[in-house]
Image (cartoon, rainbow, N blue to C red; front, top):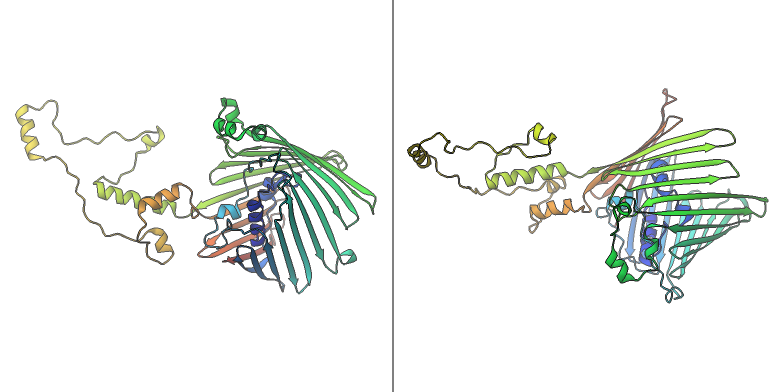
Length: 471
């Protein structure tokens, strides 16, 4: 499950206008979330709080053979008013969804790119009883420039710890990062260049972009997306070794009217590894991903498939109650369409009414009209029952909430639309990962297991449950 502090850090990036997706390190973020999601081990409980809009705390306690835990603190100079900290109100897709469409590229104005910003974030975490300390400091220098420093102190590491410094420059169309680490004297640089899609609108006037919108020919609307290509190069000054990789990505944009998809390819020429990934949002509630690795030196290959399936919260119960109430008020019979009508995508033929036939005489027709009065809609007062949501939460309905408002909120994709998500993965070694995440009352839970189908005598390798509460 995504940790609370990582969620708050994303809120800091959103408040300061920084795009985390526009980086070479995030090239395979979508496929990794669907294929390499971690499964919990043992029992773990996390209590978090956004005490003020600028200060957050988190306490974690777990047991995996031994009892351990951690204490975390975070401070931001920018008020994080856009962050929903209450665990019962956090939108589950923002917290748990693996497939996330690319965010729009920021528009960097020439006169504003040099404006100094003093936005900062400081984060620290102490692990007990191991006494390991990790820290993170982020400093926004300008709208396009950011400095990040992270450190870890642990007695098991060489020299007692390590530090990593990173300078990030994001101009929208391209992004460059330079990094240096005390671990092996590592120095590296990586960059990403975007073209196609919305990249051409960055230099266009804002009014022209707004007027054009997402318009275009049918071909553009059918495959409207952004291409990204990048590379990284790093070298260890102490161990005299280096490495490099190249990568490319195509991902559809949120304004794309077709099926959202993401395809990537990365090449490591020194190791001879070629990797392909493909992720697609097959439906509103389902996402699929696959990965293929091939090594040109050893002719070895690996593959993996993954999926996530979302479950809506009581949508069938709410709709059935609304349809039943509407039928009672309007005097309509509560029947369903026939199977033939459903297959032909039409409504059933109207039922025969007790009207006059074509062969009837005028006198018979008049007598029949006198005997059978015209139907009238009888509206009977019905005692208002509690909604399905209120029954599940053991409370009464809000006095001002109407069923139509509840229905429209669910149709518009409100925050309470989903109750959980099931994630699964499988690789060529028959290793299965299962994860069920959701919310019960005010608690967020994550239940998962790693299964090895090649060892049927003891297939469960890990099994765990994580519970989070935040306020």
